[in-house]
Image (cartoon, rainbow, N blue to C red; front, top):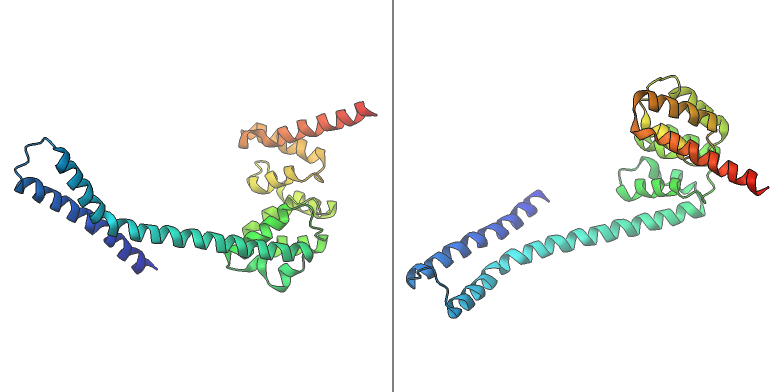
Length: 217
């Protein structure tokens, strides 16, 4: 792939140099003094169009290939995501969560963000154990049991600085996370000036929502 890209770059650069040399030769042979006549302008434009055709073609090919790859990746991701929606066990049968394929990993991530997919606690625990760094997306899924969240909270709450802020952020996004934990996270973030206090924002939203419910009664 690298050799192909290098070749395309050379196709793009060499004609530019030839264009400059050709233009200089034309100006010199015609005794050009710095003033462009209408005829010279048209000739120069025509020369530029012809000379830059080899430049434009490879670049258009590269752009077309890139766009085609994006479409293919999106199509593959959506197909796998539909399979997961039908049956979350599809992830483990096809080993999508440990695959080196971008479309497979993205399909799992999108599935975890889709709260309508009924993951079981066992499935989420397995994903959290086997997914590597992407397991942080498991923490934000509302289908995590409170027991599972307590295990995760037990690990990160021992750190007064909440260094694993990505897990903390996902915990704040999970509606099943107890507000008492959010209060602790907010206090520690404020004490350490971390991440603009996003936990506090969640706490305030939760309180307002709770007050609205009480008022409506």
